[in-house]
Image 1 (spheres, rainbow, N blue to C red):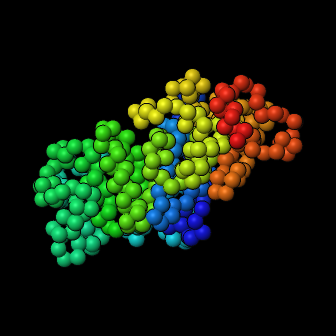
Image 2: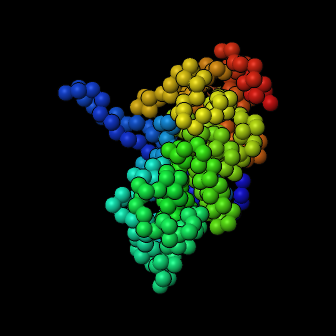
Image 3: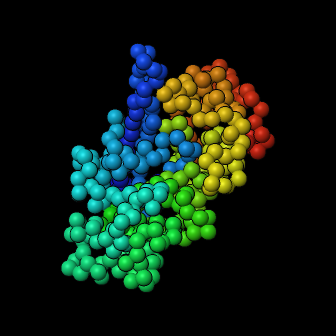
Amino acid sequence: MSTETPVLEGRDLTRYFWVKQGRGPLARSVPVHAVDRVSVRLDAGKVTALVGESGAGKTTVARLLAKIIKPDEGQVLLNGRPAPRGRPRSYSSQVQMVFQDPFASLNPVHRIRHHLVRPLEIHHMAGGNVDAAVAELLRRVALNPPENFTGKFPHELSGGQRQRVAIARALAVRPRVLIADEPVSMLDVSIRLGVLNLLAELRDEERLAILYVTHDIASARYLADTIVVMYAGQLVESAPSATLTDSPAHPYTQLLLSAAPDPDRVTPPHLEGRGAPPSLSAPPSGCRFHPRCPFVMDICKREVPPSIAVSPGHVAACWLHVDPAERGGGENGVLATPSASMENEIKR
Ligand code: SF4
């Protein structure tokens, strides 16, 4: 892990949402623990992938870091200092977000030129020649020649081109951080790679700190320098990408990796067979993964596992990595029968 101050950091971010349960006089509001003490850092010139199933809390973390929503607990730091209150222009000019649906994020009644001129003017970035600045942005995202795109409406572009326009719009204010929430999941498979390669270029050439939110661990492995895995609102494992994908230390990460990469599938097939993610209004006690874990021990049901450094820069929150003498009870760590490949992984 870099010793430099991260460009953007979330520390112990916690966020509840209140939902109504029941009807009539019995109705009551209960908290949904969408994000529970999640810490994540974004470094200049690096991509951090936030990976997990639908409902894991990834998008909530992204929105907390972008300051679109406020944490109930925890802190966001920009360049090592507490981020300002609210989302002032000084913050949004440094931290930009790209959303999943490029069509919804571009107002269909405006031409592409308008979408790019607006942030340039609001943030005074045009430098006296708006059209030249627009053309440069379009070239930056490989929409060439720019004059073929400026006069078009969003519906006249392909999904991949629209997402490139959304990225160009984010770049208009020259941010230091790009938060990309499932930016390729709504695109055809054939054009996803092009958008991922564009993000890699922005990381390498402009030293952007990028948060790549995805349910597809294969694309995270392709793009990211670091992968952070979330399950049921909590961080369960983080490591450099190659380390995490070659030697996953948490059973949930192992299950994600053993699924055939299918970006259209939200839940890998064998996880479906192992039950669904828990309700976050009443999450399981102890380790939230325990009802689905093939390695579950008694202590997993009682106590939240600590985060253990399993190797340099590699952290996993799992009782399997705690010395049996320390976790008590002499449990051997395997009550259910895991597959041979999973057992081998966990013994590495
Ligand atoms: Fe959670 Fe226990 Fe399974 Fe580790 S072994 S993932 S702590 S249930």
